[in-house]
Image (cartoon, rainbow, N blue to C red; front, side, top):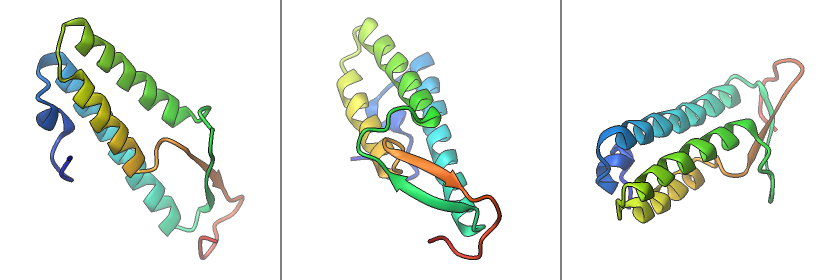
Length: 114
């Protein structure tokens, strides 16, 4: 299981270019998590709504596309850690709620998040 603060690529044993790509993707996901927290604290988030089948979100689409491309490269070179990487990536996305979230920004700053 992934330990917070420890790169997924280190846990999965990924090396080379795929490792750099996975680390980049993970840092983007952590940035999104921090950004959502910041918006919520600033009172700019009107509603964070979880949807059952919302796969049109831009951030999720980019993360999913980058992750799948990395996973395909791992399978292409015959790296058996691709399955572990897929599991870890899915767990990390679910941990920060990246899989099924949408943001609705308020038209003006509010004091609290409803």
